[in-house]
Length: 446
Image (cartoon, rainbow, N blue to C red):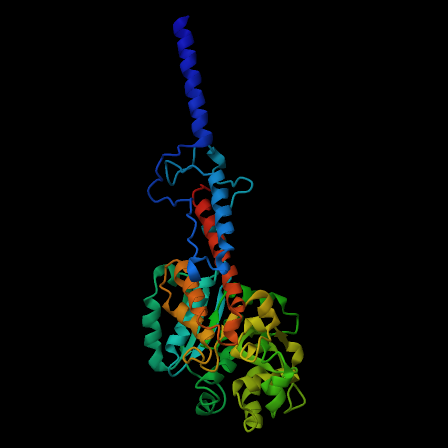
């Protein structure tokens, strides 16, 4: 009888220990080899002047602390047999429990986003920095369509191959020669800036591409391209392209004061960032001032140029303004923060969307990345250029940017650092939050 009681007591103790192990887990057990840790340390806050934390970074600590607390509440046990189904879940091992995040690797393949750029002359580095900003912040995969002079093609291929595999797997690219399907090629090539007119021929050359985002080489993305790509869903049945206004205030806008040709709206549009539905462009007859009936895109370009070539100043951008003057129903106009240029702050802040939401796409025209006229623009360019791939985005990109901006407060653009930093701050927060989800999800078996 005594022996029986002892056996029962031992079994009860073992049962209690087993239950404790199942619900609490072994806190001292080291992570299995190849498994990712779920506990993420709080990122240090960059000290500001006088050793105090800069207020721009005050928002990050609650986000990090909340994330860490949420993870610590439910630390998932790691499987002791990686690659095998957990016996505790049996035949339901591949079924997600309510509330569980699905691992990112299991998501279905998504539509590619197409990005086009034209580079001639000394625009190699500028183009690579633009592509770098696109890859750093975007989620879906990208296809780069790079139009360049023959001498630049091997340089692009060499530089892009040097990027680490963690980034090169996020995109594919093609390098095309400069080509113009109608008219005099040399005439087109010299229109405004070298090769800039190439963008007019993208619908003709990229026949297998449905939609495309074109940007100038001096553009930087401060948020995922996914966000500007989503404007395609907002097009109505007649809209086939999207651009931002050339200016917000007509009385100081260039077109409203100096243009000698028709232009879109009250201030014209800037073509440095242009989202296009190429399929619609190829299939739409365009109203024009040359003949009473509509002309298709390719057959319209050269006659249009011949008619207005003595009246245009900004080359292909002027031609696009003329086209959409006669076809206003075909254009979607997105807000100024999606094509933010020095004009939006060098005369005083005049882009309300950027003041409210921050800059989404920075356009450093006027060569401001390479001189000292607008140090705020130059600071952003240099920080992204110098960011080492695979370094911590906060420590090696955001904090140096904060520091550089302190040296630009003597300029009109530098007096509104929140406009330049607000959207990048949101992007960084989202990046960190997504990283937490990936780390948690990686330890579940599906």
